Amino acid sequence: MDVSTVFEMFEEISKKLDRPATHTVEPVQIDLTAIDTLTERLGNVIEEVKQPDKVKHQHTIEIASNWFFLSWVALVIIILGLFWTLANQRQTIGQYMETDLKYRYIKMQGQTNEETLYRLERQFRYSDSIKIIRKQVGKYEELVKEQAERMERTKRAMNEYEIIQKKVKILKRR
Image (tube, rainbow, N blue to C red; front, top):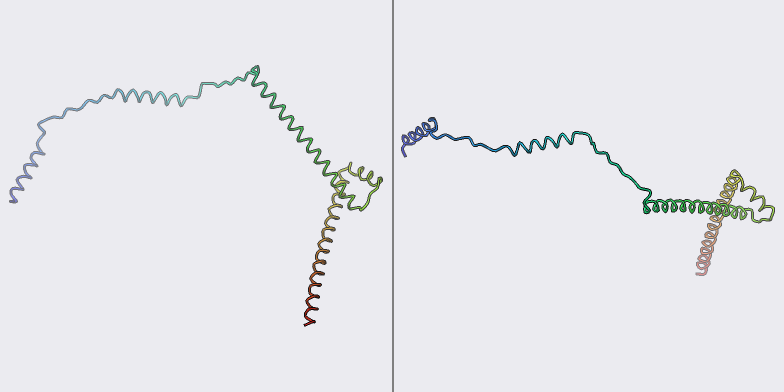
């Protein structure tokens, strides 16, 4: 192809682009009424949301209805029964704890008679006396436990000593 031919083609394209268009494009009319309607509705909804809630909620409970009244009465009775049971168990446990402490105190003393039992019952009327007795019994039980451990260690040591003595006798015979 010749360069002049290519150049002529570019010239023709350039002229056609510079020329005003012979056919005119008519603007298309779009129906925007549906969009306007939706925009208006959206604006109304936004305004309603911004306003404070005007609706007041009211809940009514009719005590006259049988199921409601009876269920509340049953619930209160059950709760009171459970409180009574708890209080009774707490009192029983307290008595067991006192009885256990009395037993341990008598065991600490080693013997008892009618007079010491009466004195012990009187002492349990006062909380200070109970605290003192509890401390005495605790110290006594700790001492007994330590003594039992020492006796156990002594017993093990004696067993080991006897085993060693037997081994020594066997070695002497050889």
